[in-house]
Picture 1 (tube, chains in turn cyan, blue):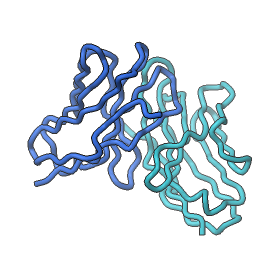
Picture 2 (cartoon, one colour):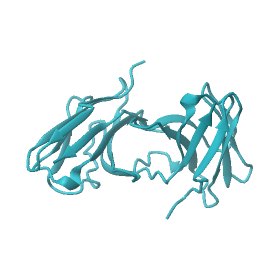
Picture 3 (cartoon, chains in turn yellow, blue):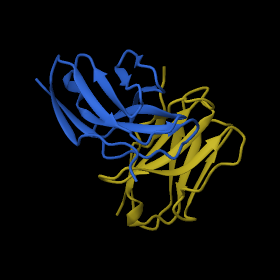
Length: 114
Length: 110
């Protein structure tokens, strides 16, 4: 079946511009997660959505970052006034809720801020 | 503070079994062992997970020691497309703040 889909796959933007990254989770998955991975670094948790509950935003690095999930499905991660240090691969994952359900990741959006 | 320890790299011959070790000596009773891999320019790919029993699926087998302090991921017949970084993580149910360590870079050679 279809996996987690992310778009765009690559994004180059100028410093100071806003960007939107999109994630389409696996159908039926109620949990959705955003992470970022910098070159040679591990995963950094950003935000977690579970059903209709309030999202866990504790990983967002600054108030320039925000995310929403509409209709319990598609999610958009928005970065305002991008900075060079925002350059990274932004990964989205989804899973069933409850139990040890594994996370399934998309292939990410590679963001380059020039 | 890494919860798992893996060798940094290993080579494997194409067609042979690849046995990837992972130490998790401080694992708690409610933590599962998960394996993911990441091929260059792709997102992490889920492979398998287990609690205390050995598990097998179409991709791999997971052998967990009786004391649960270590595990081995077995790729039964490695192919060149299995070349990737393999991550072993321990996680309680619903823990989403995943922490991937450096993993093991596996190179499958023809």
